[in-house]
Image (tube, rainbow, N blue to C red):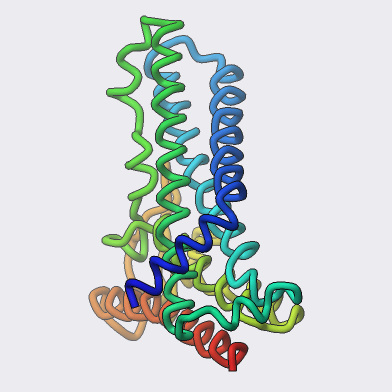
Length: 267
């Protein structure tokens, strides 16, 4: 299987290397523009002010990263199977359905997100170095600002031990894979909407709010939204356990469905 994946990777790189490079260059350009636009309009001259602004920009950049990886999967996954000119050549590749699916998952879920994140990291480092070079008085900004790693690995309710931004990358990748596996357009749109609703964890009011499935909680709004107390048929620990099982099962189930649909298309 590993040899087949390497063969598929080599073929993909020969045919699509320019597209991959252009995608990463586009990520770098948009990231640089976001940094330039926000920092130039921040109006902050103090180290603390610039540090806060830089931290906010980094969190926005991570949201951009999530969106870019989702769009990349939605546009490129199983692309050869939807092109009438290349469909037969793709179907006849010397690899089983599982290997082809594994390669598509590896490319869209691991390789491109990591490459895009590496590009963002390089732009971030270059922007900070340039900023310090232009204004040496801001040399302490990097020490006091939230890092890009903090933004990527941020956690919150109800998944206190799983970075929610990484989870969103996995979730949207799973849904995009399902959409691209051969669903009809209407079904694909409905699936995308339902998928977005399934993972929305947002307190709509200060009163009782369904923060995640099966468990109601009281929310407190202050500087940040915080967990107050569970109001449910189960304990807090049971609620956490249910939440983790629910959110872990969602992408796994969608990946299984997308694989079955992909296998059906091949047959």
